[in-house]
Length: 69
Image (cartoon, rainbow, N blue to C red):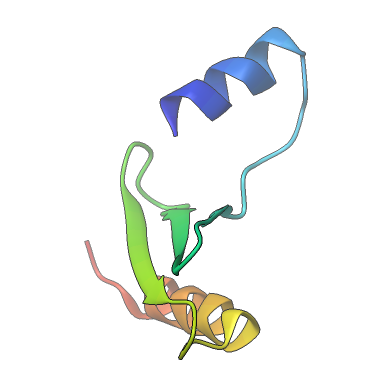
């Protein structure tokens, strides 16, 4: 997350990270920053053979919306 934020800053990108997806041979990893708490993020690892990536991303969004930190 820090590396991506540093890269965005060095490229002068005026945008926000929604989520970061890492695709491995057998897994998906979703990293989603918590908008209301800078420096805090959700990290979800999924079994690629059993997961639905689109539904997982939506669920992570719902979890973030329902969080109280």
